Amino acid sequence: MNSATVWTTMWQQADILRILLALISGIVVGFIYFQSLRWSVNRIHTFKHKWTVFGAVALFRIALFFTVLVLVAGKNIALLVIYLLAFFFTKILIIWHEKHRLIQDKSKDENDNV
Image (tube, rainbow, N blue to C red; front, side):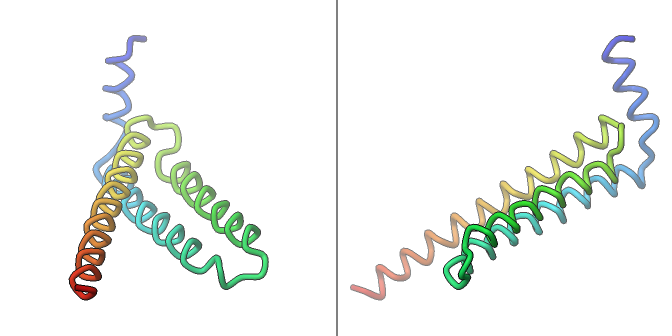
């Protein structure tokens, strides 16, 4: 079986609801992933066992990512690709937004100090 036939079969098996579910799940998991990372980095100094908390939150993020991946995509490569693209696109948007926010905050601090 050639690769074109495999992709055609995968797209035919993926109905529109599963495609939307993969897309929405990728976006939601990407957002939760980044927010939990932000939470663990911002709060790590308040915990006695810093590395334990950071490791536990990291394991949560990994488990969340792969659990949703398996539940949504299963063995369908097309759904897997949609989920991964939505996840990484969401992460890129969040990183872009945070970068611009940090630049604005830095320029605001520099203007306040002048």
